[in-house]
Image (cartoon, rainbow, N blue to C red):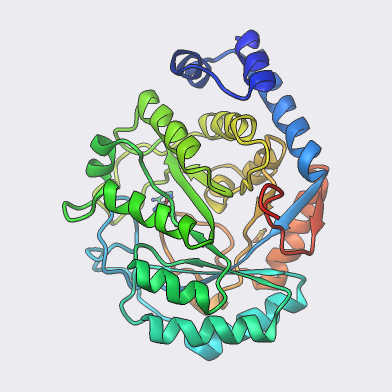
Length: 347
Ligand code: 5AD
Ligand code: FES
């Protein structure tokens, strides 16, 4: 197995068969080597820097019904909220003073946040904080909408593809959603000049190793600047309540592989990874991750942005999370970078 890791490190790619062997291997030596090469690679391009993204969860309303997600339309016990313009601007103000230079506005697909609402808001944030990047994560929208928000100053867009296999995609999503539409959105975002983030959940129900390889191949085709992956975690009020969650080991394995397939990519150590293991994010950082996304949402709404069970950081103020994360990052041997943190491939 070590030879496969060596090959991935030196050539930057593997055959499907080799990937499959590496993904499913329980060889701990190979896992250690993968971690070592992943860390070496991230250090080559990013040194010890870890970029922070201030995550503002602007709405828990969603017109979609993804089967895995706790804020899906059918979650009748979900507590819905939407932040006002003033709330969002005050999160940015707080975040700026804490050193964040990227603000991520993420939400369910909430029809309230039309282009006429988003465009002036994006413009205002960019005007107040010209040295900051604005990232959007608002799901599938029209080309025209992506264009208007880009023109207003948005820099980046996160839209996980969720599953690059048609078969798996359709098992995780309601009938009216389609993988082809999702891909269309991602290619539109790229064409419009956004720095794009795609990604998927690890250990989602029905997911096989060959589905994961399809995800990796799709990412090689899209070449996004950021790749967000985290373990699937069941939510009690979804159809997947009784399913098993993704594991720490498999998530770390895939993070290591992603770092070697995409040496310069931005790779977050996700909140979901920190949720399934107390030191999950630190282990992610030591396996190639170079981004963390602390929560900047007002504490009063945090528990309501309830994508999966037992989500961490729902009781802490932004400043507490910032301090906690800084300690965690430094304890893992890295340093917090108070900068926009663009992908070096794109800077
Ligand atoms: N477990 C883990 N991740 C989830 N997401 C949504 N629901 C869950 C869950 N139950 C992820 C999706 C989405 C991102 C915002 O959160 O991949 O794109
Ligand atoms: Fe939020 Fe530790 S990062 S409390």
